[in-house]
Length: 324
Image 1: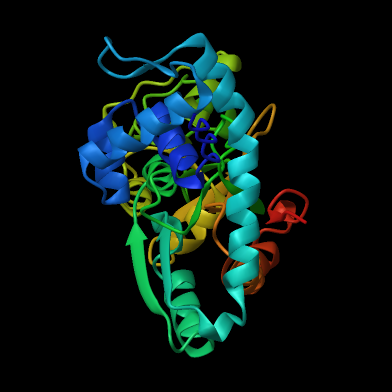
Image 2: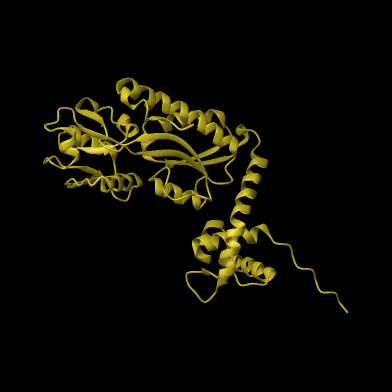
């Protein structure tokens, strides 16, 4: 009588594809992310379910929905897969100079001076590496990192926890009020909406806009606004022209050098608030690369933004700083 065949060991590929399908909700999305055919992805998932002897997905539902056992399984393997990816990255990292590919996404806050200098620096240190630089909003960069379309991002730290990504806080960037250099009304009256000077706001699809709106609601502030824009330079130009006032941050103000002679930056009245900018990386981004980018970004932030603004606006010294 033939002996029954021993069950196969769990495959790392099965687990990774299960995690992707659970997060993305479809075989098609998993196929696009991994480069495998839909039938191959489906075959691996069936192997995993047969090996475990349970149904992980409700196969009658679209988009794909996890069963209760599938939800429990996902919770238990998330941390393990994170640790495995990190370990693989550390084992294969070698010398930074040997890196072959690095895809970096950044918000536009850095694209005028800091990112060009970072690119030149990395090119010299990683001469065999192919680089891709991508500029977008913070939430888009986070999405691309989660979908493994980027290796490393520099963005605003989102409100929700990112268990599937590595986060290294870089800069505490407080919110400030920017007015025309010679305002016709007091700062308090303008922010409280007691004047006709309109509030010029960031587009509400940006994380920075949601942070500002949330704080204004908490403080009971409501100012009329007929202008919304996703570009900080345009907001600065409008304020410099006397068309209104805005809330921004010292880092963004530091980029508006051509408009600064006609602008005045003020500490936010009442309870202050800030955003944090961070390096955000996939689990398989090597720590040697992270360390290199982290050190250089801190040097560049000090040189181009923190030190100059501490000199011109000493009141920022306690709030506009690197995060250790």
